[in-house]
Length: 107
Image (cartoon, rainbow, N blue to C red; front, side, top):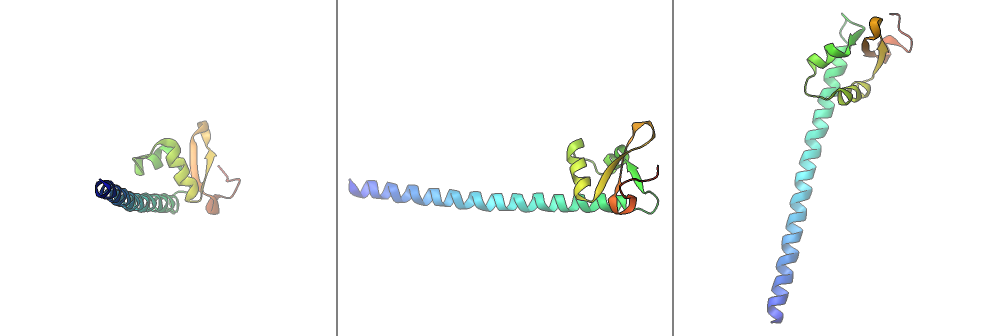
């Protein structure tokens, strides 16, 4: 009887430990994938806004080139890439790198 209880406790502890370790491994891999996606998307946004042809780009043009993100998620990516938002003619949402446009760009 005591042997059965001890065996059950050891088996339960071992399976719990294994499940915990697997959870940590899978979470770590997910975090690495998410970090890589964040880094790559910020880098792509920065490169797009560093183009010599444009000081600023419309949000719709950026969205067309960096697809797969919700609107506010894309805005967060742009901010992390060093961009700021401006209002253009007709209240268009324009984005440009702060280092290229300063706080008050000339429209």
